[in-house]
Length: 105
Length: 123
Image (tube, rainbow over all chains, first blue to last red; front, top):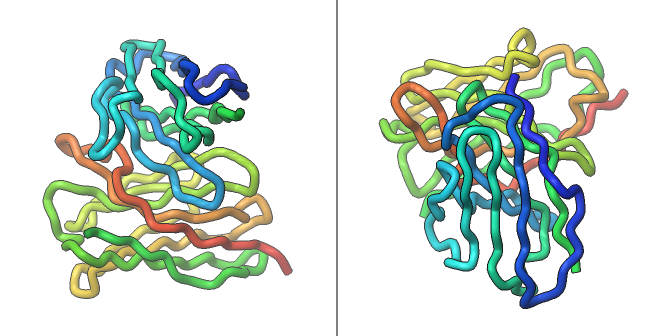
């Protein structure tokens, strides 16, 4: 099983600031990694797939990078609605998720 | 617009079988471009993939749950279902159904989600 480790567990920032979230895989997943956003009481929403491709209707302030074992989700300038929990997910070897990063004000 | 809706009992007794159905509307479950599947989220915790099914009936299951899980599809009703046998308190969770993008023979990413349904395992 490929284990995904996200850091930090919690990130405290303010609107307008830049957010950098990390996801590290226990073995290479090539570029087969996605990022999801989950707000309280809602289902997750796909943000980024295949490491760097924005999903449909996702704002340009969200970007993904990385390959192999190290990946980053960057939110260039935080909007109030961006404060949520973010998960990474790999599809190389079955499907597994990271434990999540809580982005809070 | 594609929508997914989970349904089923909200309470299941330990050792019994959890059964949920996901009804797909606004699109066909027989699309060759997608898998369909289930994910769960225990209270206050992260996401766990349960398994997938293609409209032809081929399935993929999480190895840690494989011995207890069956996912089936009914294309005539445009729905798919989850059965989880011999449930324990640890199976208490919010259960989501989702559409998975597809690459070759494998499910990839979850691009459309249902709202989720809470299932508690308790006597």
